Length: 436
Image (tube, rainbow, N blue to C red):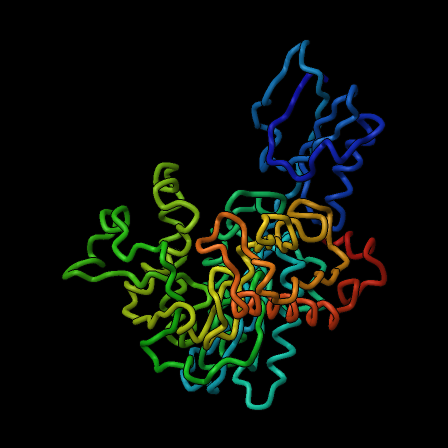
């Protein structure tokens, strides 16, 4: 009693009202069923009945956030077991003569937010991989998590233990684990199914089968040009001057949606992991590189390995378009729905929006969600003066720009309709939730 324990919030206490401290403790325990280990700390307010559920990697030795006779909170913790068991997979042979095709890999920490997106992504993959002549022949979800999750029966998955064990509950940068997971995966026989690998995100949707032109010779790769990536990032130049000699620059891209020769990825992946590991500390270095530090680590690995990346952005990219920042699909085969378009009429009256962050129960709901279709955006009508939120310049929607948003929503809804309401392998959503 009279103690508030520290931890990253797993469930907001304002929406998790419990009758007493015992019920609050039980609601935390429910998140740890079947080794899920999502909640290690509970904090209860007997006046408001708010029950905050949190995750702290070492609650036994963590210093309380607040304690004393005037602190209204009652807290408790679970000293959760740490999973050290590494899954065993058939090792790679190292062969180089691989079938000419594309292996799609998708990394994920397996959190609720990423898992509903993963279902949509894989559903869209299945639809377009079935098109005649498609080069897409294999798909693997690379799960960096300490235990299996509710999607193991629905999506072909290989699990690898995370470096950051706290990410099984909550962490601020789960993507720091993806490079190690890919480096582990490239050592397995699963990685030898195709000549090329494309790394996709959970919030990607495939809208057509890709062009065979993306399968470049060994020593060359194809990526998307991200305008916010600095090819001569000053902090990295200072840390790794040996790679920037003679005016050498990094490709301003990231691991996703890069298409890499499988043999080249054997060199890139361990370097990528090495650079991620070396730039996660100290805190000042993390701040200097920011949220794109994982992308920079990949770019540095590409430079260090000598794999040249051919880059383009919309509408010239053969890989990716990002509505509504991009106005048309162009040559791309993937749509990235990160921007969250909002549509208003000429009088700034709200008309429609879609934001992945508020889909279902939001980013921090219990999950898994029963997937729902998204209401379609408005039809094109020039007289209505349709426009986007203030963030975008220009705000005005053209027929083509609105058409790309509509394509995204149409493909999203087709993917939803093709999926069972409950993840495959479970009879009810409640049963599936035991394995989150």
